[in-house]
Image (cartoon, rainbow, N blue to C red; front, side):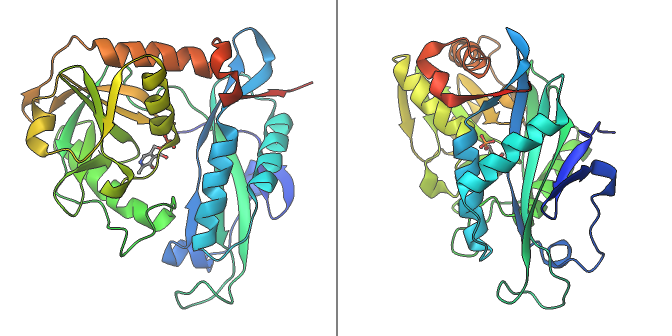
Length: 304
Ligand SMILES: Cc1ncc(COP(=O)(O)O)c(C=O)c1O
């Protein structure tokens, strides 16, 4: 069971989490007409009265853009202000996860986006490691990622996560930790809530945005970090057979951070992972605000 943060933002107010309740007729519940974000917050190791949020501006911009697909106009600045207030109200003491959601809040039958009210809520929960930090086994899913022509993949739309849920359960029920989904072209796409990277011949490779991935903020950060570290990087389509014999594979995401992949189906990957390790160490230092070069990626919220 999760430990939820005590205060939620709901229907324009900060109220106790337990009192934030929706009607059974809520449109988003029936039609998946919602979109969400997900951010991690950690107390600053140097000063626990300061909370560090990684790339808050990017997360708020992505959610504001997702809301456009729901025909809901909410600015990134407004989301950012509410999240900042949310953190101050909750006074978190350990590492946590913030879940903002835009959703069609009206009560009514018929899938549509016009003539239905929308709203915005935020809640949070304590969160340590989402996946085992030392690495995971992955199944190649029988479920494929949606295509942009049938689904707005640039948005983090709630309805899309039925595919992630199917893939994750299929993987876990067959003895794996996580699933890797192919796109409709049969190329490697991403995991159920993470982007994917592989290393071959010293080069860091990840599927490009045209491969129907979610444009992950961790992914984007890793690409610029790798370039700054002098690593060779490329965004291109990845075949299944390349992935299975890669030198290193890892998953990236807000929840998963950088999680190494130990095995894909019956293909065991090397245990030496120098590039994954280098990126993981560098990214951890950045999220803990220990690298002044990337201080602009970290928002500090004072609890005083
Ligand atoms: C399907 C999917 N892909 C990738 C990611 C990684 O994105 P980010 O790094 O912005 O958390 C997520 C998590 O939000 C996700 O749900």
